[in-house]
Amino acid sequence: MMSFGYEEAVYLATGSTDMRCSIDGLVAIITLQFKLDPFSPCLFVFCNRRKDRIKAVYWDHNGFWLLYRRLEQGVFQWPDEGEVVTRISSREFRWLLDGLSPVQRQAHKPVLARVVI
Image 1 (cartoon, helix red, strand yellow):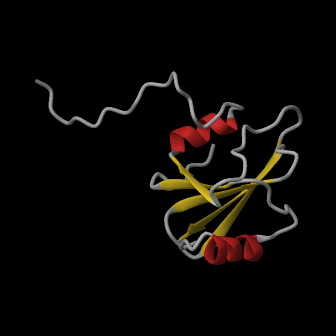
Image 2 (cartoon, rainbow, N blue to C red):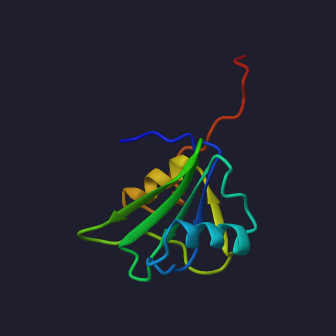
């Protein structure tokens, strides 16, 4: 799998997005609706109404990446409408791609302490 430097954050557009949008349309949504900077080192992810396809936009040095994934079976555990955009970690995004909910109550919480004894 390709590695992108989006460790800062992954933003999910809750609800559904028209998958006919290209890079320019998705960047307009990021800028106008989310009020976020599409050039930041973040991944912006959108899902269709049936929750079986996603598109992701990522800025890399001198151009945008447009990533597209279509599931042959099953659906993504996509958050319903509520907030316009939801921020998740790259770990939670991997869960989402694996068919799990981004909110895993059984998952170990990250340890923030930097001192042992």
